[in-house]
Image (tube, rainbow, N blue to C red):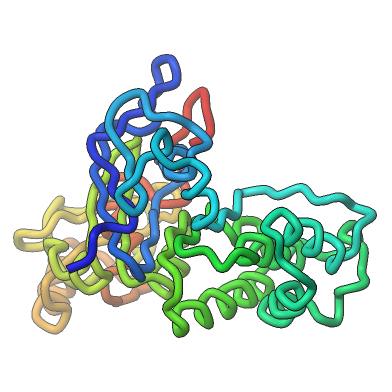
Length: 317
């Protein structure tokens, strides 16, 4: 119905021997909130920087509202709002002065600064020097700067990394408000599973420069080959020794946590099988947990690694 807000076609970006982005295709529709989810080194930041025009692809094409950076750089700058992983402001400017400075680049007056201060919840910090803001407050300020020009497309690179849970939730609240207004398309990079599922309509899972899966949370989990997780630990020595399968399902042992894990289709049906298997092998449960599969489980099944594992090599992507 509408042309894509962002179209990424067969895009590649290499750094020496590192394939930071390796043949990515991605289409984002107007008004969509999309998370690029993956560990450090997955290629998320490199991809977003190419969308932002900060880096150029080695191969492939990126179009924003049907236009490339070569065709319409000034026009694209006006419709984008960008928040980088780290933003450095002038320490001895106040919050209000910082926003006023950036607003002047767009020819915006003090009224817009007041609106943004209210939106990011820093009205009471308007006269506070940037150097005296907390990490969460600085990140909200960076988000405010990205929103000054009322962008059609908002690109946020790891906006809550390093923040404590309270500060992270404050940033989430701003983004939820924007989502209700539905005035922007948003692309968010994150390695927080909860952040991706809470804020975004659609999740694109990336690893080693490639897209592994793309869809809504429900769709991604529904195509996962099983539906529920049983995790348990055993008493006594030799707890790493068990038969390799529970019926058709492989039993996996984690040496770090000293826990077993099995993915099953139906816990109510398969749990008695596990109890029988333990009894036959003379094993006693020390701890036990049943739960639904999550994005973390999906990523682990696809890659053999957890989302918090760093996959970067010689560059940070």
